[in-house]
Length: 353
Image (cartoon, rainbow, N blue to C red; front, side):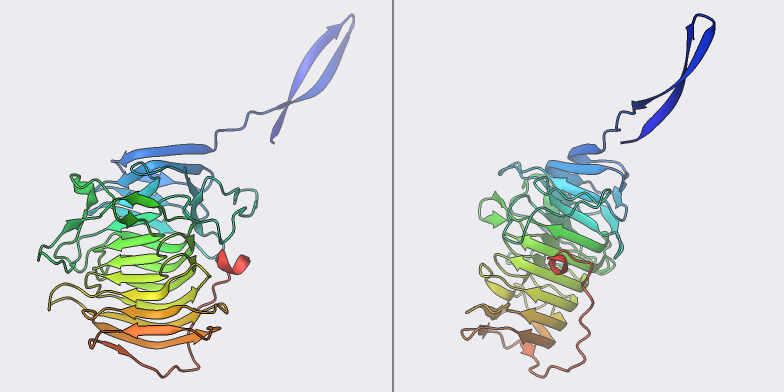
């Protein structure tokens, strides 16, 4: 609590007494609740707490900039009013943290406060507390009806802010760098649960680097088509798949760490596109840690998938580990080099537990 001092002159008879007093200065309101659509460029700073209330959408033509060290929390809400951040096609999210000051998305149930070094009060079994981050772009997707675009299930189907896909593989939705997304994944609509980070038709000029998804109820990260590259990724304690690929995703995921828990399903699930022209993915330089679980699946790959998996090491796997590759279009290189360039993830929540 800050104080300020003032001088008060009191006259008592012939004497004047100089009295030094102190008074509490009212704290400024550090919490800002955000709801509805963001329709003009906005800047979120680390000296404030931002509370997402229901769906918050960054509209096309608008940029949301988030400073290093900023903490964004989300209120618990049920469908169709789930609290989450959606970046629409044509909008940009510029969230560029640092290793010393990562940007953190979490739940209001989390006591974390970076301004006074208060640590997180939640653990890896605290999942499904909000809706996560969804980015929608204009890059190609491979759909069963042959269309270039579709809407994300769980968002409003009649809203332009719910659609993704297009014809621009170089589309740019901004930057996520040194970002931690925690404790998300809830039911958001019929047949749809939210992931920690969802990338739908996101283009190659978007930067996704040094990102952590921690304790998510559904998938850690799911990619629906698009061409964006994902570098230096950690997914810890997802209740479903750590990485899920769909709709002809044609980017590269490199230098990743997956840490499974009892509730995890597959480490990596891959579904192909719906046309012969669907793109091919690359997964390389990864470590999948089974954390000693008795049984789990490393890969689950459907027959339409196309891509390459190389230099991915597994460790601490139980006796009943499975791997199901039904696709002739996916090559899994069995040789793993000892020079796996797995990054130092010491900045992340997972390594602080």
